[in-house]
Length: 107
Image (cartoon, rainbow, N blue to C red; front, side):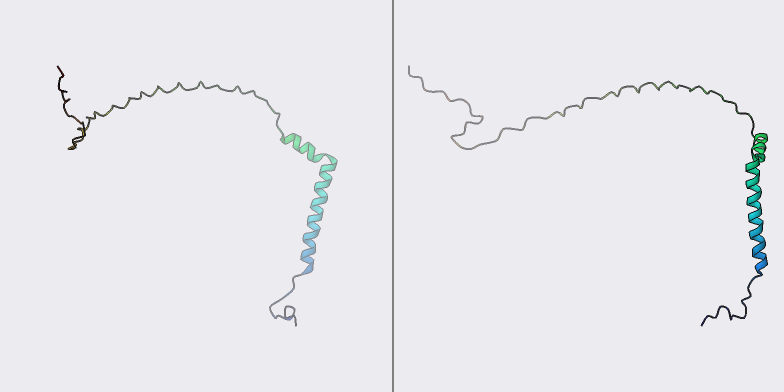
């Protein structure tokens, strides 16, 4: 059951009001079309349009900035390293830091 038509607050609008809007829109379209076809719109635009003036603009050339000064790179200072002491060896066969032995002379 459709209750939209039976709702007590629902009152349909006057259809004559809708027809008036449609007639006004159609008349406005006919008027604009007639103006375009007859050339009145073109004449109206000629009155509004000002003469164009062309101006040549020269491009401004900005010189490039000077190159940045070269970075002065300091060579890293070598750390002063002392040689480690020689290893201590207690073996008889080891010859670390032992004085050279003299061989007995055969004379």
